[in-house]
Image (cartoon, rainbow, N blue to C red):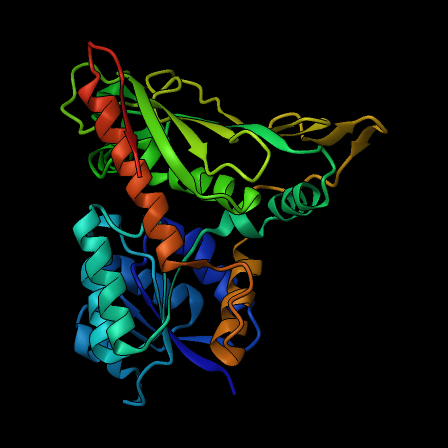
Length: 355
């Protein structure tokens, strides 16, 4: 008997990632879709054969036959996450929420508290954790394949589909990129993945951070820069210096250029070697005293493995590698703080913070 899943939000990420993966996940079946946009929800309902697509929250939670829902995936835009998750808490249903968990600290805490009070699980869709690449890195770090990890460099520089619609200045500013920038920019939107990965790989929380930014959109009033760096210090283990993570994120990497380009890299630097993942040339390897070992190359996301983990959680209570609400809230808080610091440093020296 499959669990009845509802999906709130039928936008880009749901369309290319979550809904196809849910359709392939044994034990889960999408019964209802919610989206305020009638065209978007109708298109998703038709494409994936979902019996109910509605803009009415009450109808959504009731399900197509009034039997209710067993769990809900929240894949709406970040500003809608709090409203959607709080509605799920009111109905007592478990939630898997897209990142970032919230757009400010107060909302994040309210969401976590409401779900806990409802006795329903809240996890966050950090799909990067489930890629074979991330899984292998975690295994190698735990195994000591590169000794003690001293530093990580995590880079994702791209243009978020370009500043202009269809990359044509004559068609005006792209609402997709503009929306992501107004929601917080690259560190809040995508950088939460890398902040989470660093802490998860090392098993060491972040205890201090600072942010710097470069303003690639000089004529736009965005809350943060289009190119941003987060420098994170992890809790030191007994007898070893604290590890340092540098996260570099950009939505301004050639954002006004006609032709798109991007750079996505992981570098984990240890006392006895390095692990390198570089998407563009398809490079994933371990270099240590034994030599160079090529590792199986994969893309950095895996929605299917994540939803299989969610299905296990819902049926057995075993969360596996799913990110807890508190882990996700911490990553979001750091991303927000780093972005505020970078914004405060516009035209001046960067600032620092700790927690």
